[in-house]
Image 1 (cartoon, rainbow, N blue to C red):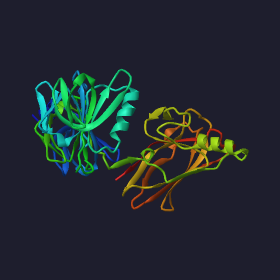
Image 2: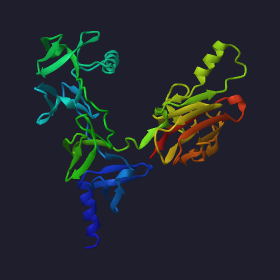
Image 3: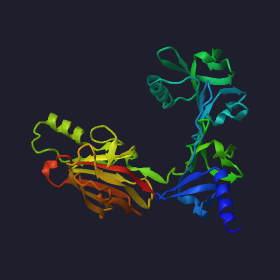
Length: 404
């Protein structure tokens, strides 16, 4: 009888959707979700139930994520709360928008909650122009039209939108513009406030990304609430990822430094050579110094910094954080060359002082970056050469991030 109970538990776990829960400290827990509210997440693991503090969660991802299958044809709808929805259709009448997310699934909300709607897929050129138009300070709705090579915009008032045309008021004249000619719509909100920072970002199998201020597990569904109070439900089997790292993790590569100084080669003599040398020697974000992926001991890092020796970078931290974590190593592209001294200072106090050597083949012997930065406001990274005239001094700092 006692032997049957573990088998029954394993059978139940296998039947329930399994999730991988990553915490801010890098640790992971796997199992099925039992209970989730603002305070804690309870996970049923193979060894029993584990209760995790909600504030320490980074992400929740299913072991077998559903395939993302956006409807065809697609409409892209951006909400003022930061949500980005992929839909099959968009219409609006008398200030109320109807968004068909998938067959049988419709969302109705006031156009006051709509930021922009795009009806056509964008090329690289049109995507840049669309972004530029959205960045303009225009006091009115915007109708963006497209031809075979470019897009243009017109300021006025967007009224009703059907599946075939949109009613647009331009210079006091009502126009019926065919949907086939419309690239997108941008709604103006005179009293729009800055979007609140949402602690949850949910990606579903439709390809939509929802911003949420609150989240709750109800049976086999996730209920998440937008800042304005709207509640949306999605089955666990339709969840691709739940990201809880917003505001809790900040990558150094995403922060603009206060300053960066570099000591150029002493043989540089002309102003032109000096400018070229400084550009060549600047720190790189999310790529190595050869403009390729950051690569340390065979592992590729999509986020991080690359620095040469005799470089000093200074940041003012945008908030209060507890840890600075990452991986340091000479880029694989130049190994076995490279020998640098890495110093990390917090408000003038040395947090790390270590050597990073390219001839070292054991990843365990590279200095670990896991530092207490509680109360630190000014963070400084210094890289110095330790010989061979700086040859191969290409330091990569993979996934260098601040954690609250």
